[in-house]
Length: 455
Image (cartoon, rainbow, N blue to C red):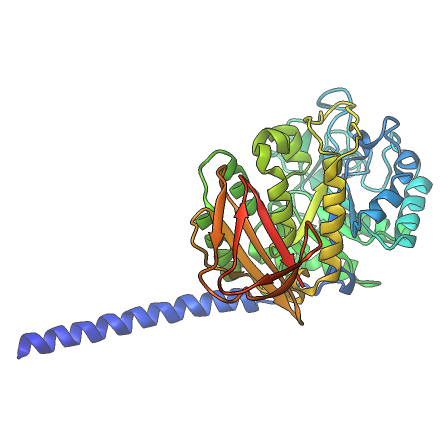
């Protein structure tokens, strides 16, 4: 009898302990999800983003030459144009012939390679007239070694024990800024406001945002929004950055794509990823989804190199999972070369089915509420099938719904549903034909194949 009581007591204690720690975990995750978050511009809820590499976009590499492409980008249903840094590039310790966009010589000037300030104002005005928004890349963590602040404000910079300026990591073409100096905060704010006031841009993509104190971003963002709501994109993944930023980088999803390309990741990893995202990020956080960008293309390889025949499937997947999809300059032309980072290396614009694919995906994103960004869109819900290699889900919002099946393998499969949450009448994304999904629904998917249905 005493032993039974001991066992019963131990069991009760174990259950209580488990419930106690579960409540702590739930409270922690809830607190993260309910944490104060930046309010998004209303126009950002259902659009996609496009990264502009001006240097390589045309043979001329100028804003005037780029302007002729704006109607094509509008036709592709692009919502936000993100311009890589448009500032003059440092010459001291420059890498390569033309240097890195991210070695800024003057925060309130335009790179003369691109034209004059009036040219940029004209592009912004034209983009706005076409219904697109413009954000510019902002490098707040470091400057070039010959930045105008080097002489006027040497106290803005990090120094070593010998009083010499230092580079962050091994980025030898730039010098680190010291945010312990609050006067730097004011100067950086004023430089950012210059572009808002002078050119009427709509926000910033902030380079290595997590290397700049969060306190600076939470301080500066409300001041930048004094006249209008702006869009803030952080080149970082930290959930807490959503206090000051609308969107963070979905590197984790991109890494899954790469892992699949190396036969290291499976469909199960995708399910785990989205459950983890739901727990770690605020409810209305925007996450940027992508297969490529300027860093990925130049340093890690093209989509063809890394994903091969799976690249179209990943393009579709990145456009319909929770998040805002990104297309990098040239992807719509099936960009198949690594663009040089420090040299002139123009994109080869050719006809490709990828342009039409992105056009259709961006249009679906814009008009189907299930695919809208953050809480404006539908929640990710797993669909159970008979195949472990198949990643399947539904998203639904305000009567709009999508149902998707992705074969995360190089072998054809015949997939059957094992639950009923996807049951309904849809339209097939590829054929445009009516598609009825019942509890006995099955579909044949080729290697790296997909099925996307919507209503």
